[in-house]
Length: 91
Image (cartoon, rainbow, N blue to C red; front, side, top):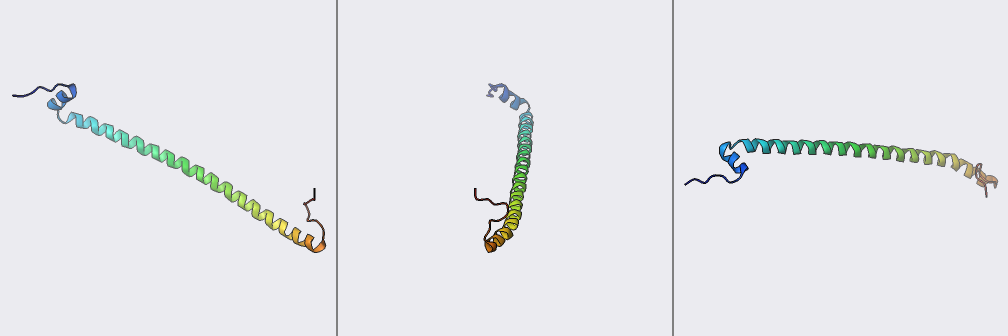
């Protein structure tokens, strides 16, 4: 005694056993591909944001280093002369 499949999918599997696997395989490949592309996009955005933050941090560090180099001699000479450093006021 054979039972007839009750649902369209089971009927399709009974008539063409490899057809659903092809559909499932294509769907799985699509999921993998779209996931990979999304991951790449996210990685590129993150790398861009990190590079921008690093460039800004390096600019600030350079500015502070140059400022410190410019202020240090003025402070040292003012300390010896007893006057205020250039560019610094007691407001």
